Amino acid sequence: MTPNNNYLDFEKPILEVERRIDELKKLSVNRALDLSSELKELEKKLKKLQRETFDQLTPWQRVQVARHPSRPYFLDYMRMIMDDFLEIHGDRLYGDDQAIVGGLASLDGSRVMALGHQKGRETSEKLARNFGSAHPEGYRKALRLMKLAERFSLPILSFVDTPGAYPGIGAEERGQAEAIAFNLQEMAQLEVPILIIVIGEGGSGGALGIGVGDVVLILENAYYSVISPEGCAAILWKDRAKAPEAASMLKLTAKDLSELGVIDDVIEEPLGGAHRDPEETGKRVKAACLKHLKGLQELSGKELVHKRYLKFRRMGIFKEE
Image (cartoon, rainbow, N blue to C red; front, side, top):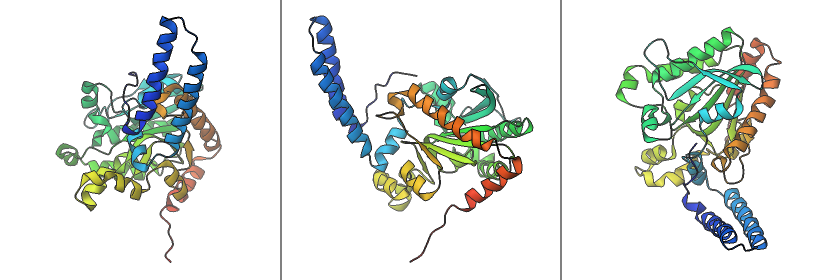
C-alpha cells in the first residue's frame, strides 16, 4: 500500500498537530534537545482531536472516509488476514473481470473461498479494474467461485467495496441486471456459510451482487446504500452538489444500518479510520470473521438457507402512524 499522504478537509486540524509533532521530533534529533514533555502533550492533544473529530462525523464525511485512497482494499486483506491466497480467473463464458477478484484462501488454517471488489491504486490499475465497478462477467465469475465452494463445502467470505456495478453499454448488452439478479437468487440457496464484509463503499446492486449472506458485517466508516449520495442528489434535486444532504437521508452509515437491521455487526476501526492503521484493521476484520464463522459452521446447509431466507424477509418492515 502507498503511504497515507491524502488528508480530507475535516482532517486539516489533525494534520496541523501532526506536522507540529514531526517538527519537534526533527528538532530534538538535530539539536539534541529533550522535547519529550512537549511531544507527550501534543500526542495527547492529537488523540483527543482525532477522537472528537471522528466521533462527530456526518454521514457525508463517513462516505469520504470510505472512499479514502489509502484505505485497505480486498487484496490488502488477503495479505493481512489469510495464510495464503490462490486467485482463480474468468467466468468461463466471456472473460476475466479484474474488478472482482476471488480464489481459494486459508483463514487461520481453514480453507475458505474469498472474493471481493478490487479498486486499484495506481492510475493504470484503477483503469484495469474499472475503479471496482464490475461487469456481468465479474458477477458470473464470483458465482462460479461460490458454486465451487459449495461443491467442496467451503465457507465463503465476500468483501464488498464498489461505487456500483458498471453502467456502460457493453455491460448492459452482456446482461448486467440479469447477472446480478441471478447471483441474488443463487446466493440465497447456497448450502455453505456466507460471510459478507463491507470494507469501503457498498454501492447499490453492484454491492448486493456479492452481498447476500448469513451474516453481514461492516467496517465503522464504510457505507452501504441503494444508491450513491451523488446519484441520489442528481435524481431528487438535479444537483450533485446536494450529495451531503442525500447522504444524511439515505441512512447509509454503519450505525444507521445496524439500527435498521440491515447489517449484523459493526467492526470498529482504529482511531482516524482504517487508512491510518491498515494492519490493525486487518486484525479486527480477521477476528470478526473467525468469530462469526464459528457459529455458522455449526449449522447444516438446510438450516443456513432457511435462516438466510428469514434474515432477508425481516428487512424493510415499517410502521405507519
